[in-house]
Image 1: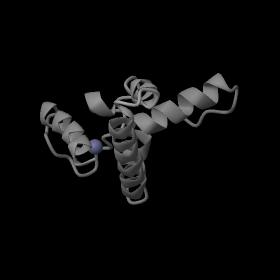
Image 2 (image 1 turned 30 degrees about the vertical axis):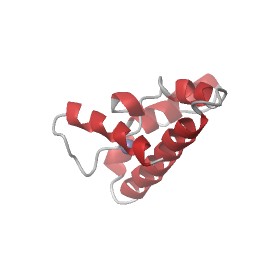
Image 3 (image 1 turned 120 degrees about the vertical axis):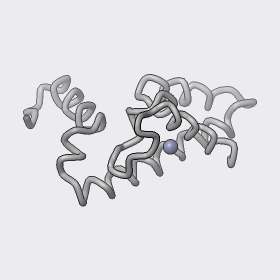
Image 4 (image 1 turned 90 degrees about the vertical axis):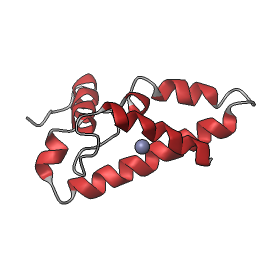
Length: 99
Ligand SMILES: [Zn+2]
């Protein structure tokens, strides 16, 4: 489980490396929305289940951290990829999208 914290090494690819108001979910490569289905598929293989649980739990805690930051910074929320994902899902479902 501790090894799943290694997925935060992708923060080293960002500039700046640390931005306290940036939401890592959807931003960094190992936190991207495209890799999440891969982590879910890893749940199906007994050999990778524990790692999959760890990385998915990591993403849940990062998401909670993002929403904590958003409660202090609405602009951070509107500029985040979580907000873009939310609007994309709402559009897909035919619901009103906030602009
Ligand atoms: Zn992370």
